[in-house]
Length: 195
Image (cartoon, rainbow, N blue to C red):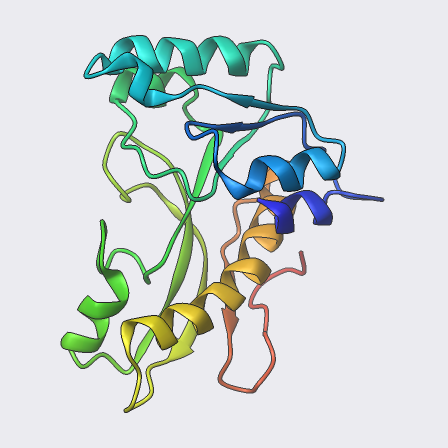
């Protein structure tokens, strides 16, 4: 979230209007406040198992700022089709695998166990299929022979901080050309048009 917000300056086609979390202890809230970005918390625990009421509260918070784009980052709640369809075509998410491989959790361990040569992350449009929306960008890192899920996750996280802002810049101007980044040459490369 902070990387996205810090990138949205100058000639960037978007501006952050709200950082919304379902957890009051989320580190991104204090960071957003330090950047002068309004914040809100809609604690999912206060709604018990009533997902409809939780999502109604999320909708109310979002509607108060009327965002053009919603960027999920570290939001670990599965959103229902009712919520997703309300904001269809406007929600992005970053996922720590090269989708369609390894939707869901434990992606780094799964890639290592499968003896994959590469891993990475994907930014995708959110649909009512978990981690199944159109992929708008991917960053690729090699899997090393001595990698653990933690070491691989740390390298992938660095690429997430490059990929998500690049995809958001394109998406904000209506460009869905996929962004591809790789650490193969020790520096990111961008396939397609520049971000």
